[in-house]
Image (cartoon, rainbow, N blue to C red; front, side):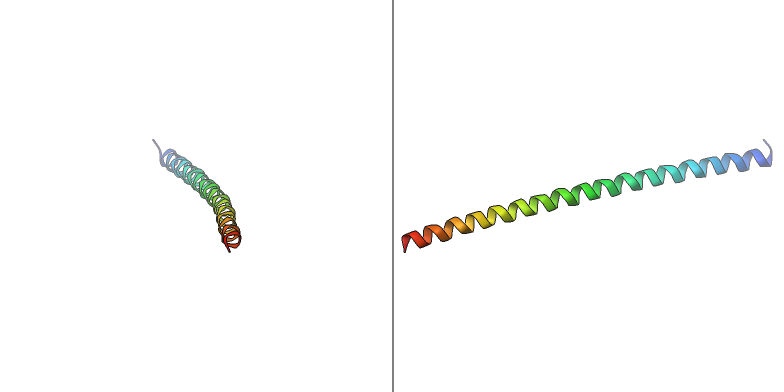
Length: 65
């Protein structure tokens, strides 16, 4: 194995490592975005439920008065 072979081998390994790291980072970012979107949707749905419940309580209170 000459010096050139060793350099090529090391560069190959580094390139593969960089590609793996980039792919993992992209996957993590995509997962985080999905989680944020899901949480966002859940929060909106929760707000709707809270508004509905508060509305029902107000209506019941008004009817009782």
